[in-house]
Image 1 (spheres, rainbow, N blue to C red):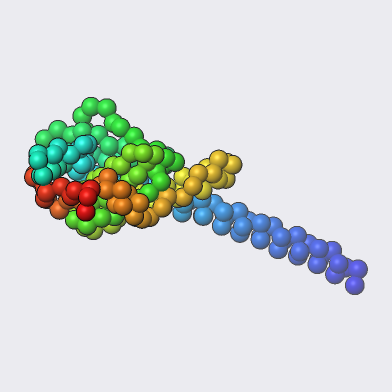
Image 2 (image 1 turned 90 degrees about the horizontal axis):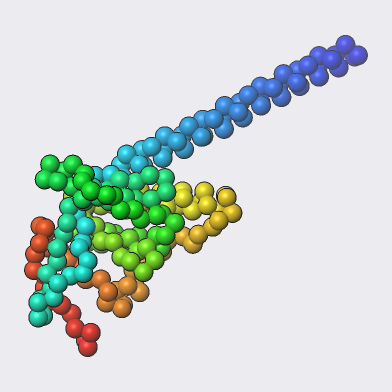
Length: 193
């Protein structure tokens, strides 16, 4: 029996080493998958969209809406947008919206989506409904990743809300289904109704 004890200890040590190697491999695989997932999110969260110019011009009871073409691209901490030339090459300085500052992300009709950051609204129009759905999903994922990283570091930020009911109730955002870079919209809604 005494000879079997060292064999059992050796077997337990070998099993422990194998389990440790498997756990190490699993951790590395998870980190690699998270990195690959982040890389895919970032590569899918870029392209040419239209940004709603601020503010809309009112002509009597009509409202003129101006959509400006912009290149958008994301990194782990925020979304940047930049003017583009007629060949869709970025020009000028990029502007940035930090994921930590985004409190709401909402997908609207007509391939439009809104980011609420602090007291500012950013309205974008994607090239298609499907592209809009992908962008909104990816932006929500990237915001959640940033919040999880901040929480792990002890600097938690509130999660973004998904509804814009309070925005629409105060009438600060008008939906538009007009395509093109500049168009006259429907008559503006009065605050009396």
